[in-house]
Every structure is written in structure tokens, then in C-alpha cells.
Length: 140
Image (cartoon, rainbow, N blue to C red; front, side, top):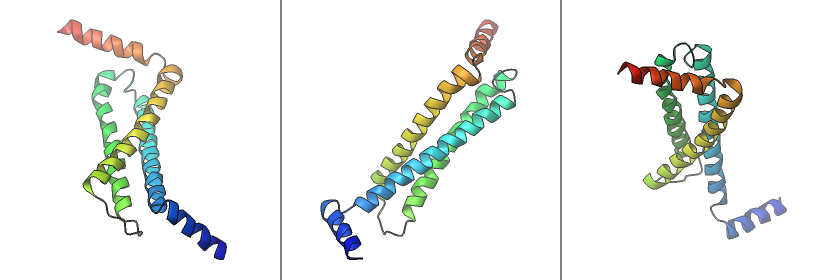
């Protein structure tokens, strides 16, 4: 027990907010990855329903629903951070920072998934997408 208390006192001396910073980073990663996974599942669901092929004219509008998962991840992440029992105070700018962090983690996840999706899962998606826009352009 003495060694554990000594390590805590040393950490508190050099990094007094270490536990709080560590908790914030865990929450940012947790909810960023969850939002990215939810978007991944939603894109696969769109593919299964044909919204990335046969019904692409509808899929171009349903794709905006992805932002709901990002907003939900930010909201739940900040709310979870606010209810932690450590007694930390959440200011406006710290909440903005946490929201940006969750958004950045989600963006990285989505970029990786979009690359995998376009190159391996549905390689003809971009061709179909360009054809649908060309058809709209020709119609006026």
C-alpha cells in the first residue's frame, strides 16, 4: 500500500491532472470509436438495402443521416464526461474541445472505412455515383 501511495503522490506532483486527462482521453476515444462503428454499420445497412446501387437517387439523401451518429456520439461523450464522479468542471471551451476530439476520432474511422468500402467492399460505387450525377445533369 505504501508503494501505491508513493506512486500516486509522485504522479500528482509531476502531473496533478493526470487522472482527469487520462479519463478525458478515454472518453474521447470511446465515443469517437463508437460513433465511427455506428456509421460503419449504417453504411453497410445502406448497401444491403440497395441505397448504394439500384436506389442511389434515394441513397444520396439518406447518407446525411450519418451525421446523427456523430452528433449522438458528441452529446453522449460530453454528457458522460460531465457525470464522472471525479468532480471535474466542464466549461464551454473544454466541451468544445472534447466534441472536436470525438469528431476527429470518428473522422479517422470513417476515412479508413470509406477507403476500404470503395476499394474492396463496393468497388463500382464511384462509377454508379458518377453515372447518377451525369443523368441528373443531362435531365436539367
